[in-house]
Structure formats: structure tokens, C-alpha cells
Length: 174
Image (cartoon, rainbow, N blue to C red; front, side):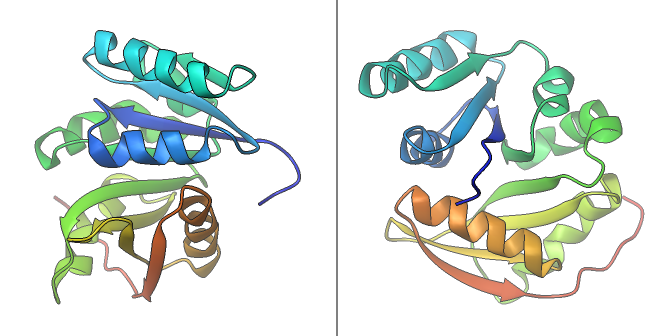
């Protein structure tokens, strides 16, 4: 884990994966920023996290842009249908940041799905986390070895068993 505190933005309505990551890292050297459409769910999650870790730095933010602006790592726990909308909102502040996309199950051709996000956020380091049937195992995929290592360490802090797939991503227009 880095010596300096990292700021992690988790964007979405924090389903099982986003909540598990937040719960797993809140006790570490991280500042958490939470954004989503369902603020009551986020406030409830923040209260749960504070109850377990009263000294944790957690902030619920009502704007994806502001949430991403402050973050070192941005985790997108959103349905595929909202990806374009969120990418447009954070495009200008995502430069050189690690963007983590939570995806469904890993399939042989799954890393090719990363092309869409890479084209929308071309100046960021994109990593995809694929859920596995049995928690806490995940597969992460991306084309930046340093970003993959950072996310692997983050997820290991959250008690996930991580497998890494380094695969060059293509860029295109979507």
C-alpha cells in the first residue's frame, strides 16, 4: 500500500462489488468519495462504514465530476448503459488517472469490451474487474502494468483473491 493516502472515488449505486470494495479498504490508508443516483443508499453505506471505522475519511458527493476531480483512482460500479453518460461527465478530470470498471463474469473475449471505455477516456489508465462466481475472487484486465498492480493491491486490501490479465487494448470510436 502506498505511504501517502490515496483518494478513491466509487461511482455508482454501490451494489455488492462497490460496497465490498468500500468496506474492504475503508480501514486502510484511503479517503473514500462516494457518488451515485441513490443518495439514501450512499448515506446508509457511509453510516455503516463510519460505524466500523469512526476515523475513516468518507464523503458522499452529489456530482460525478467533483467526485472524480479529487480522486487518484475512480471505480465505476455502474450498468453498461450509464457508462457513456458518466464517461462524458468525468472525461476532463480522468486524465492520467486509473479508471476501474466493474464488469460481469469473465469470458475469453471479455477484455475486448474494454475498447469502448478506452475510447471514451483515452488519456486514463483503464482496468476492468470481472466478478467471479465465488467471492472473493476477481480477474482484472487492462493494458497498463502499473495500473493493474495498483488495483491488484487495492483489491487485495479489500480481501479479494486477484488474477491479472495483461492484454493490449484497442481504441476506436463508439
